[in-house]
Structures are given as C-alpha cells and as structure tokens.
Length: 302
Image (cartoon, rainbow, N blue to C red; front, side):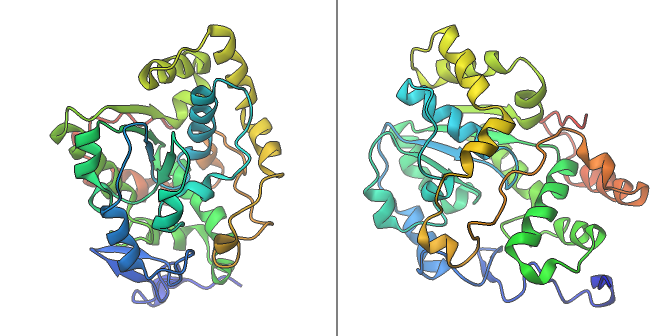
C-alpha cells in the first residue's frame, strides 16, 4: 500500500536526515567519508589544469552519454572508459583522488557553480559541457532511479515524488534552480567556453553532427568516420551493455549504490506520457511557467 506524503508536508523521504549546505540538500552520508561541508570547501579550492573538462548537468540528464563521447574524442579511440563516471564524480570522490587523476581529467558533477572552483575555471579557461533534459522525462527517470538508491522510497508514488521534485530544497538541488544558475553563469561569464546540448537532440536528431560539434569545441581532430563509430558505440543499448562490466568505487557501492543499481532504464524521449497523469502534467506545466519564464532554453518533450 502506497503511503502519501501529502498527509505530512514536513516529512520528505528523499531529504530524510539530509545535510543542507548553502541551501542545497545532500543525502545524510557522504560516499567518500568526508563531511559534506568540508568536501564542498575542498571542491571550491581545487587547483585546476588547463586541460580539465567539466560536465555540469542535473541528475538523469544524459551525463553518461556525454562523458563516454568526450572520453572517446579526447583519446581518439572508440573504447569505453573502464571506470564508471561515478569514479570521476566530484561530489563522490576525495580531493586527493581528484588531484591524482591523470590529465585530461573529465570531471562530472551535479552541484551548482557556487560549489565549484569558479575562479580557477575562469583563469584557466577550463571547458564546460552542459547537457540538459526536459523536466517531465527527468522527474520520471529520477523517480525510478531514486527508488533504487533510497530503499524507503519503494512505497511512494510518482505523485509523491513529483511534489518533492518541485520543492526548492529537493535533494541534490532543484531542477529549475539548476537551469537558472547555469543560464546566469553563461551570461555573466562570456569568456568561459561552454558547450550545451539537449538530451532530446542527442537522442533523436543528427547524432553524428553533435559529436562533430563537440570535437570542434574540444579542439581535437576527429574524422567523420571516427565520429560515426563513436555515435554507434554510444547508442543507449550499447552503453547499457558496456556499463554492466564496470565497477563502482568502493566508497559509493558501500553507501549509495550497489552493483545491482541500474543506471540505464529506457532512455526514451517522451516516456513521461506513459507515467504522468493529466493532473501531474498540469502541475509540471504550471511549475515550468512559474519557474522558467523567459528562459533561453528550448525544452523538447517529444
């Protein structure tokens, strides 16, 4: 029997015992063992390299795809990373681990710029990649993923989760706040190189062309043949299969995810139509109109 959290608006199973840093809610346990506040300060003080690449994205927006494609372009080989992207996820690994990574470091994160070494990013011209996804597919994907990560969510409905998703203090940050801070950062820092791509475009449109655009942005030589082979290797099904042989960092597997956690589900554009009721869709439309008025982002829902 599903429990409905609307009966107690002060109880939120996603944020249960969470830690709030600068208004952002994190899960109670930090995977790398360093307290969240200390870890965020470590991230802010990181010394960057000019070859670093940052993938900044809201959860379940397509980070895996962009990370694998970037890895293949920088190495010039159609070979999957042997590590999972969580091995290079800044909020999950220690400062020492990040410092010891070989260049070029392709680091990925879901935290806002206020928690990153922005000054270093500006001074060293570090490249930033941003993949974004429409909020309706995002909330459905997050719902199924979070039910694996947070066992106490198994009895909660999608409607319950949608209400949580729309709150400003959603764990790992609010979708709309993330989009707006990303938009503000780009406007305020025109000298920082930023590459943007929507999840829907990379899944439905000319994928080879997007890989070629990314190669140009990364300033690497990539033939049309290489881009075509990378596109084929990074199809949803092939990446899903390849991911099964990868190993999570021990810190993460013992805290937030296990070897049985499925990072890939469907990967479809417009799958939200199979899950959101008319009432839930209206809730989402109202939030989009309220929270993203005049946004420069074009969100694609089908």
